[in-house]
Amino acid sequence: MAYQTIRGTFDILPDAHSSGGSTIQGAAAWRWVEGVVRDAMARFAFEEIRTPVLEPLELVARGVGGTTDIVQKEMFVVERSKESYVLRPEVTAPVMRAYLEHHLEQRGGAQRLYYIGPCFRAERPQKGRYRQFHQFGTELLGSDDPRADAEVIANLRAIYDAFGITGTRLRLNTLGDAADRPAFRDALRAYFAPHADVLSATSRQRLEANPLRILDTKDERERTLLADAPRITDFIGDDARAHYDALKGLLDGLGVPYVEDPLLVRGLDYYTRTVFELESDALGAQGALAAGGRYDGLAQAVGSKKPVPAVGYAAGIERLFIALAEQEVVLPEAPRPDVFLVCLGDAAEAAGFGLAQTLRRAGLAVDFALGGRSMKAQMKAADRSQAAVAVILGDDELTAGVAQVRDLGASAQRTVPIDQLALALTRDAP
Image 1: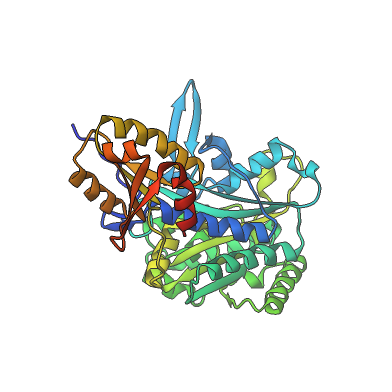
Image 2: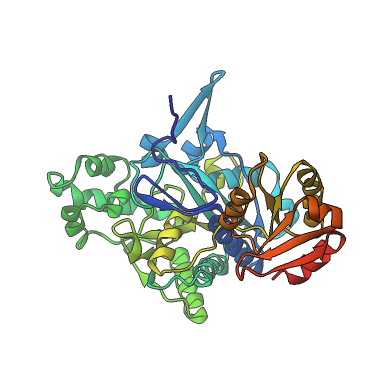
């Protein structure tokens, strides 16, 4: 039986390839993306954190929210020894767990953390949406200062600017504080109840469990109803309103454009006050490149005795690649060797094996063929490798203590003493 990747997952290979009708970029492009993200994070003084992909089920259920689609429909659950675990569907709750477990507040000041890694959701695979997908993001924990909100948004904007992504929109809203929510929920229920026959089965369930989720609908009939629906901004308290006004002032001062969207609620229950989403037309109906907000109540939801003010975002790497392709950004390809050794005969193969290690210690990338192949076959392999030069060793060269160095681009060839090869090739290397 020929095994294949599970539906909704993919391999990252040395070169780009097609999987499920989508182009999956090669490993070099992924490393480049991660490098750009890490450089931007360093400029904002964010430090990397890595959490396990396997987390307690209760952590995710309590952190993300029991009424969310993630908890109700999309988690990959693992049962073992009467314990339930989940492949993490997002990283914010795990980062908060790590913050609390390791008492990171004792490091002093607000903690600026970032992550890069895979997440898992049992969704229907489609363009830019997979069952194993990859995210990068920030979590700024320990500050309720509006500048923290502005800082993570500025960081998000800086990263997409570094990639050269244009044509994006930053949507912004406030959800107020937890105390503001009940009155807004009641107002939404009162508004939508007479229209229950128009609502989908999913939205009718949300009407009872969490009517804010209806504001996130993509159903066109339901979106028509939203035009006259109550707005959260009519229910928020003075503190939340002052926080939101301060944030908008900070973004205006930084020259970060945004569009206020009173219907933006996000799909996770832990958000309070600020929520935001960065959209791109390149992604179609599911247009979010990244999204986030403030989640001051999350720490207590997952067991902390004290609140931990926090704000952050998550960004999809697969969706970033779609936007990069739309903008025709040229991505790095698999690295090519500097040198390809062509060895003719047993003695040359033995000498060439040691020579490869010598050249590598000098900082050169070296490849060679295995299995005693003919010179013609080895030269074809050298051409396929796209190495800069081929170093040819045979019995005559070994006797004379030299090697033939052939420029594979210009087809020029010269003779170089073997003991001077490393110096000559490193001098010529770009």
